[in-house]
Length: 452
Ligand code: UD1
Ligand code: CA
Image (cartoon, rainbow, N blue to C red; front, side, top):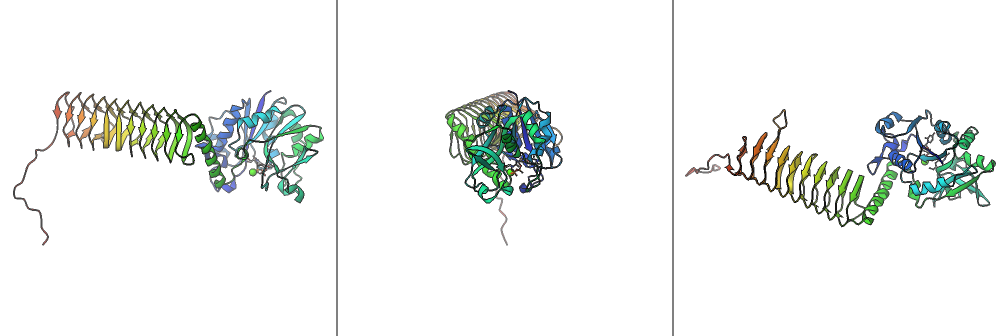
């Protein structure tokens, strides 16, 4: 069986009140449409067709990495019309699965089950029972078998009382679908071509409609406004948090975590409240992440301790490193085993060797720092001359006194000591004390100014 997926995404999404097409709004750091696309890939679809309309050019740009056929629906004349833009290009013997680009939480298990009930004589329809079915197409049954779907606006009072509704997700053979689409008209309350008319046509042709239901109604919930988007975001976050917890890491409160990308966490690690993880983040075993950290595209090895309110991006943290609180690690930071970066320290494009420490109030930019180096409070690598960036090299065992400026390019030798308060403009020799200070003096008898 070959599978083709058609993702409908041409709707205007007016209730989002946005200049951005609805399906480009993000859930867990990915556009809604990407969630549906990834799900289609998981199903092993031979081909994927995305029907777009309003703002479609933007979709192309943002989703240029998608391996799909983009199909323009010039005017939004209804769901059958939308499907018809893509389905004639699909070989007759494929099974076609229809998905909506604004329904992001559908699970592959649910869809696999649906697809498996498609035969030459059957159509598979995903339905759901809702306490409040308002707005949805109602499932009409006779003798237990589905016979038709009636839209809210076309339904009589008795039909509106039906709580089993159409999710919009269905699967059937392509040849038969195309056959039906040619027969569908727009003779209804909304003057639209309804895909749901396929059901009635199929029943007339003697086909059976096999229904199945999602495990959870959130799977078939669509996004029409930003309130629904925020609701689905929390559901998704809860799911991501639960997956991490089941694998053996603890999360202080799954309602206060935001994972906007791929997060991998090793066993017995702990994540405190209000952390944001963005892009690809990998955390080892026995790691502790304090409250309020923002971690972007970084890896953290076993036993590291990241204290509260640390922000890091494109950073590599090795075993048992300690960071923060209030540290800022910018792209290109690499902290080797057992090193420490303390509060109010900014690090950029710098390697801090094993066992080295920069515990307080420091800027380290474009620096290569060896092992067991001590960087005193208030040390600054002056890496920028106004036109170019330059490198600071600090060799193993060096001790940089507090409030030192290292004017790059400059090298501080092995085991050398820099006296506190120095401005270092030339290389400092190995094993020696280097300092640049004016000598201390006392002015005897000097009086403080007095108020008259
Ligand atoms: C549709 C179903 C309804 C079902 C509901 C579930 C029909 C006629 N009705 O109703 O039975 O209960 O979904 O949410 O199918 N779209 C296009 N082009 C169009 C029209 C729609 O691409 O011309 C896309 C939309 O972007 C959206 C999806 O199709 O992703 C559904 O469209 P929408 O207008 O929300 O359908 P409903 O009227 O809610
Ligand atoms: Ca809808």
